[in-house]
Image 1 (tube, rainbow, N blue to C red):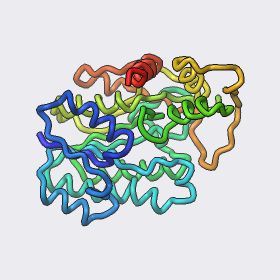
Image 2 (image 1 turned 135 degrees about the horizontal axis):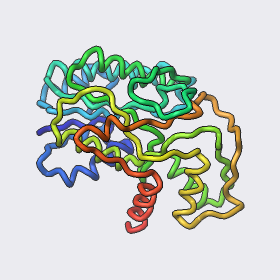
Image 3 (image 1 turned 90 degrees about the vertical axis):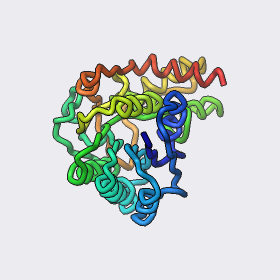
Length: 285
């Protein structure tokens, strides 16, 4: 089974590469932007012309939520139009597409965990661009999975987890909002979920929510990161009810993952346990 992974230099791409060593039966092509730029139809066409893929995991994305507000064209170019071209080539080549989406397709006003059937209403450009990418996939592909996930972090790249650790290391004060509630999700767990879907070779296509279990505010998440890394002091972390951002964000974006868990007896892990696992893992290196 041959699998294309786009966005190989991003945090999810790197997490999939780490997990791939446990799947020797798969033939992976990890494509960096230099090899495959999903914003270029020519680039996509070239890689599909020279390979026959069973699955394509699109881990390439424009993920800077704040910058997207003033860089709308590029956000939609990557998260929507690039996905459209990728979907076309997947359909033409009988390749199952696994598209990664976000909890930010919701407006956060429901007040209880979102299911796959709930109405979407993104509050920001990033969410809108990812939703348009979803729509293209549904319109073009028959064999697809759309995985909506939330608050991704890992040992790789620019994310909340690494930012909190950097502030602690530099002794900088950190003020974090309590205004938003969601579920921190370890990208290593998402990588394993993606590979489990591929290994099952299931035809139960459609939209699935995937996140770790439980819920937290960003302040809760920051506090737990510092606690588990033994760096929590009264002076380096403060909470605020309101934190000014350029992009509006949903106040409650917890995802209901029952559909994912009921398919092929899949499991999800509590976010606190998953965070602890990552802290231990990185401390051993």
